[in-house]
Length: 100
Image (cartoon, rainbow, N blue to C red; front, top):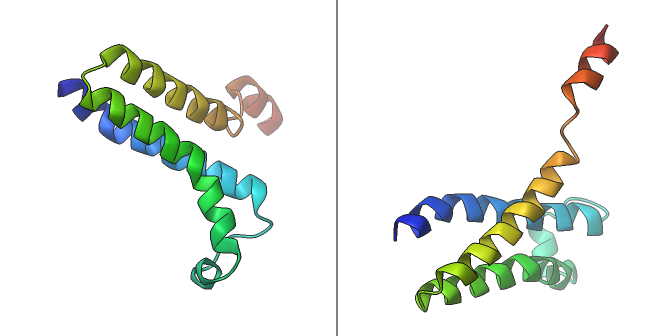
């Protein structure tokens, strides 16, 4: 339970980052609440599926006490979110030389 408690927030942040990035990449504009009552709702649901699948697989591993499986899914999720974060982080050397 300790691993699940530590990973709970971390993995939910990762899955949120993944969904956010997929929405940004695939929708031409930020969805509004009204969009969820239109045809865009289906598009958003499709974009949620990868993170929902990772979450479900992780939960299944945890419920069956498969620590290794949960660890693998968790590391995949963290790796994917980390890859997204690195696209937005400018290296310090480039930032300092650009600033003068």
